Image 1 (cartoon, rainbow, N blue to C red):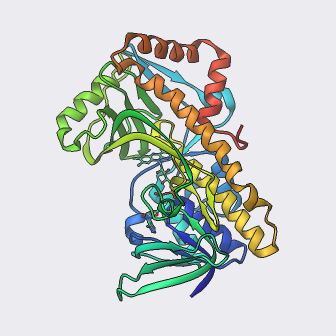
Image 2 (tube, protein in one colour):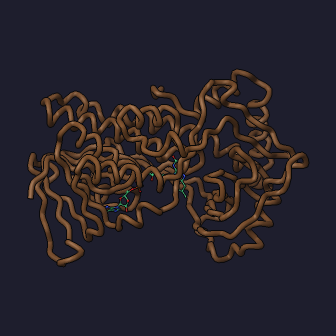
Image 3 (cartoon, rainbow, N blue to C red):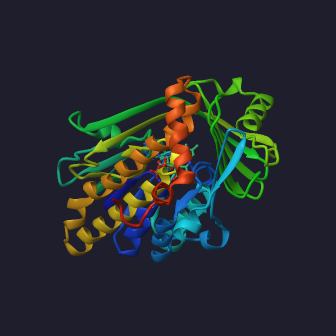
Amino acid sequence: ARFPVVVVGAGPAGLTVGNILRAAGVDCLVLETESRAFIEQRPRAGVIEEWAVRELERRGLAGGLPERAERHFACEFRFDGQGYRFDYTELTGRHHWVYPQPLLVTDLVREYADVRGGEIRFGVQDVRLHDLDSDRPAVSYTDPDTGERLLVHCDFVAGCDGARGASRAALPPRTRISRHDYGIGWLALLAEAPPSSDRVLFGMHADGFAGHMPRSAGMTRYYLQCPPGDDPEAWTHERVWDQLQRRLSAADRPPLTEGRLLEKRVLDMHTYVVEPMVSGRLFLAGDAAHLVAPIAAKGMNLALHDAFLLGDALAAYLAKGDAAGLDGYSDACLRRVWDYQEFSEWLSEIYHGASHGDPYRAGTALARLRRLFTSPAAAAAFAEQYLGTAEAY
Ligand code: FAD
């Protein structure tokens, strides 16, 4: 078999690349290790920045987002027993969109496979990349039904298979991978409970950070800072809600609405950036190329940004012989990647300063936080970075 492009991974990045290629009349094959039902339900991100929403709309990829996504106008910091609302829409005229990742993935799969007629194989096993330094690379995999080993030749491989995929593992040893470990864990929780506020809440507390992220009318994502590598089972229902109530309490706000916990996972706050995001005929996009800790809800936005650039660049080259997009791809992505990494690190200090056990760091974190509510220039800078901009710096 032969396709101009093989896309490895059907997450937000891979499906967006596939859709852009189909719209440009370029054939591609998407390979995904999980089933369609699984990827359409996997809960993860929720926040999409406004520039990304506009790009999805422009490309006919917004699906149900315009009707079903919630628009957010403010977030709230809770510290010293008080709630401090931060009105970013008032400052910038822009908002955040909350559209759960499984809904976005469902829309993108439907558009790619059912509307644009793209080929996708689910449940493939043992994906391997070959001859990436030649102009005839290939991808092999085991067919889940027959157990047969199949080889697909192509011109380009789009490595969109996330943090644990085969693409990054296929990079040559000389590739630079910068890593940063925050030395912090977050217990990621999904609660079958209505949001307790119409906005994202950040709780800064000596016991550790806590976050509240509305997802839908009956579903809320919560985060609790914990030691890295902590056992999620040590977090019983009672302990989780006790700590959430404590860390997010504010005298002038009602207590949180509790509910059944559907997901409990410990995320170790570590990040990496692959530079360049290209090796021979392999182009990485999304989490395969860079992991950003979920501190500022940037991961899916970066994945979409890469995918818009990569889809356009591959289409321009394969349909018109224009190589400029592919040549500039890695640099254009990395500007935004590093910008978002820096912002996440800056915000991490605000979240975690109170719980380091170091009064010096607690003091500077509190100063950083107070500045957002006293200096209009600091508030404007935060709002701009929190919401993201169409052009990276
Ligand atoms: P993925 O979504 O990981 O997709 C990769 C796909 O490749 C998957 O379907 C996987 O099954 C498949 N795959 C894996 N290995 C192989 C292989 N060898 N061969 C073929 N296919 C393979 N980001 C935000 O912007 N906002 C948020 O609020 C936010 N919250 C988050 C909360 C949590 C708990 C987590 C874990 C992440 C969060 N993120 C958030 C990050 C966001 O989910 C990721 O950045 C995003 O999913 C990246 O998209 P992707 O397409 O690059 O990778």
